[in-house]
Length: 190
Image (cartoon, rainbow, N blue to C red; front, side):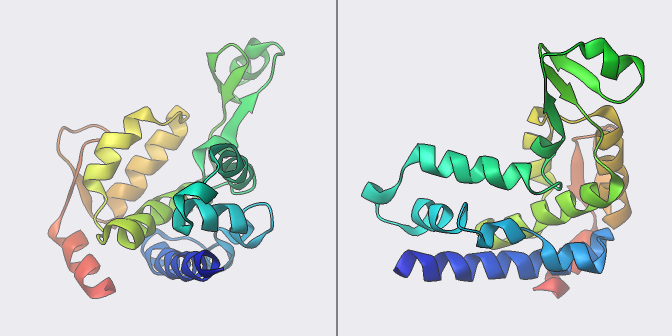
């Protein structure tokens, strides 16, 4: 089970980086400790290990998709956690300011600030773990617009990105560059 050991190593490294980045983004201590805890469960661990570190013949897209769905639905720092799929009246949510109707049966709910802080820390940690770089401006600029996020959540992402030291390049969300402050932090963070 060599893939299990490799996955455990990458998972623990990612959790360590979330712990470090979470200090910068203001994630509460207990959220940093329990970040991605569901990846240790039987519903996720083996499936992730096989998908990321197993031989090609052991990779099953459906099995991995079930693990990813379990992960998103059990971790509120993922935007997908805040998508409500329901075939009821979308006006019920939109009228009361609870969420934004984006498609038949799909409502986007706003993400509470503590989880947005964890989401940004997760992006930073993933960049460091898998791409070797803490600086996430290019990734956020490319992928941010594709995410299904409530307008309030986008405003919080913007607030947090600016607070940790990113600067806007086009004076709007999803157009960031790393300031010297971010570069200095990244160099010191390892």
